Length: 282
Image 1 (spheres, rainbow, N blue to C red):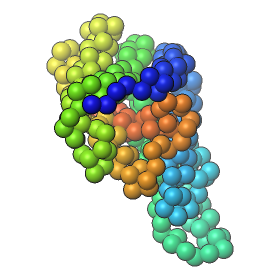
Image 2: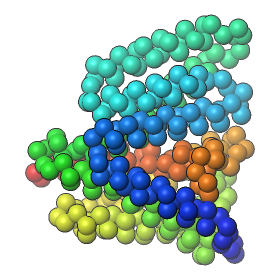
Image 3: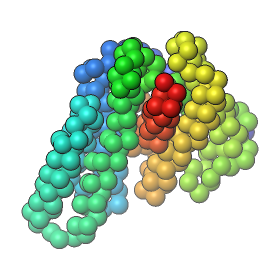
Image 4: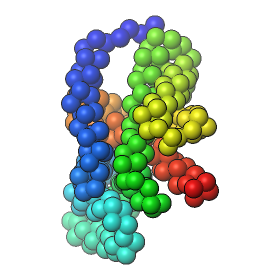
């Protein structure tokens, strides 16, 4: 049975002690503050993704791809389909021009495809956090309600990860998917689900009647499963690259992408779940 690494736990706690209040404050402010934060989050996450691809001798256009990702998030903030499509069209054109100017012609399809992948899939999925914060505006509800909606993924993800970590270390015996992540166990996965439900229940309590008990279990269970799929997907990439973390940006946690990989599929689910709920029942 594995024991707790006290130094690692302490480092994780200290990092969280700084970042958690800051993120909650930015969610509370909303508007441009939260939009810029998510744009920067996506830019750094995309850059980390590009960096780890270099372990496979790929050469994505890191800086431009990161800037393109941030620009995509800003179009989501303004709900501008015109500028989104414009950025996508111009972005792919500029990436192609960059590739044509390389001095070598070694595997250009890998470089273009990896740049496009990192510049779009991370910002687009994580950018749904902005949609969650602005969701009340679509239905003429108080803007403050968006604070609780945008806080949902963080409460679910943070508590779920903590539950998986501590339950897995204490009780983990049956491997979940050893070829991808040898340390993850079924016990930890169940702990993730239980603690994720607790996270959603906490949001229900502090938000009043915005969520019901069906929402607590639906969002908690499905959101936890999708969060773990996102985490395992990134673990699959890191396993292929033979690395532990995408960067050292967050001491004790790794990179931003390591911290937010579970959000990639979970956040869009929460947004579309709440959106459809409001369309059908408001």
